[in-house]
Amino acid sequence: MSLMEIIAQNLVHFHLWTSIQTFPKSSAKGTPHGVVRGVPPKKLSETTSISSTGETESSTTDKPDGDTSEEWVLPLSISDKLTVENIEQIFESIRSVGSYRPKRIIAGLLDDDGSVVYYFIHDGLVKPRS
Amino acid sequence: MIPISIVNGKYFIFDIDSVKRVRNDHLIIGTLSGTLSILPQQNILLGLPLQLTSEEALWLTEMGLGYLIFNLKSSGLNLEPKVAGDETRLNTVESSDSDRKLEIYQSESVQSELSADLRKIKDSVGYQTFKFFKSFQNGSRYAVLPGMRFGGKYLVYNGDPLRYHAQFIVQPLDYKKDDIGMINIVNNGRLSTGVKKLWVVAGEKEDGSTECFSVEWAGFG
Image 1 (tube, one colour):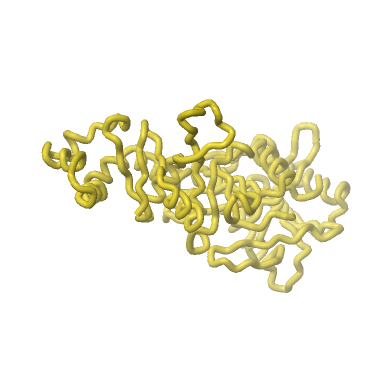
Image 2 (spheres, rainbow over the protein chains, first blue to last red):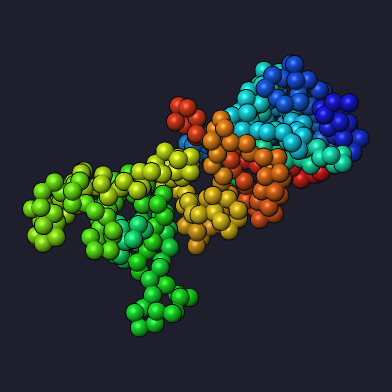
C-alpha cells in the first residue's frame, strides 16, 4: 500500500473524513507521494490571511463555489526532504489538479510505527489562532 | 539621522532621544546594555547605551535613518590608509568643528568603510527575511527581535513587544537548497501552536521577493 493510501485510510477510518479522493504522484506533479482531497467531519478552524497591503481576509479556501469545508492533505514520510520552493510547487500542483490554489494544505506525516500527525501549511502569513 | 556608534565591533545608540525615535517610529527595539559606573554589578535594570543587532544597524543605515560613527581608540578599525586618503582629512575628523566632522562622518566613503562588517550579512537569507518583515505592509509595523526564546531565528511582533505578544517564530531558509525537515515541522509547529504563534519558514526567490509559509498544528492527529 502506498504512503498516500495509508494516509487516505487513516483519514477515512480514524478521523472519519468523507468524500476522499486521491491524486497520485503522476497526476499531482511536484508532490512527493501524491495528494489527497477530502472533507473532515467537522469544519476545521478558519484562518485569517494577512496580505502585504494590510487587508485581512477570512476563509479556508479560494474555492469558486464557496464550499470551504474541503481540505487538501499532503502525505509525507518522516524521511522526506522539502524545501520552501517544493512547498510552492506543491501549491501550484494542487492548483492544476483541483483548479484553484488553496489557502492552506495539511501535511500528513507518517512515522515508521504507523502513527500520523497533521500540520497546516498556510500559504503566506496568517493570523495565529487566539 | 541617528548616530550609531561602533564599539568593539558592536553597534550602539548612546542618545536617549534617538533610542525613543527608533523604537516609537521604526520599531527597532535593541537591548539596553549600560550599567552605572558606581554599581557595575547591578545588571537587573540596564540603561543607555542601546545595543543593536547587526540586522537592526544595517537596516537603519540602509533606510537612511542612521549613520555609523566610530571611536578610533576602541573601535579597532583602521581607517587611516583606506578611507582618509590623507592625514589631514583624518585629523579633521578628530579635531575640527562638529558640523564639518559630521559631514565627513556621513560621507559615502567613510560610511562604506564603517559598514564593511555589516555588508557581510546584507545578502544572507536572514537579513533578507528581516527586511521583508520590516517593510511588510508599507513600513514599520512589525518589530523583529532575535528568536532564541522560541527556537527560531527571529520573533516577529505585531507592534511594540511591550504591548503585543509575538505572532511569528521565523526561520529563514535558502529557497532552493535548505531542507525544512519533517521533524522541524512537528517540533516547531507543535511548540508555536502551544504558545499561540505560528512557525514561519521564509525563503527569498530569485526575483528578490520573499515567500513565506506558516506552519501550525492542524488540531487533530
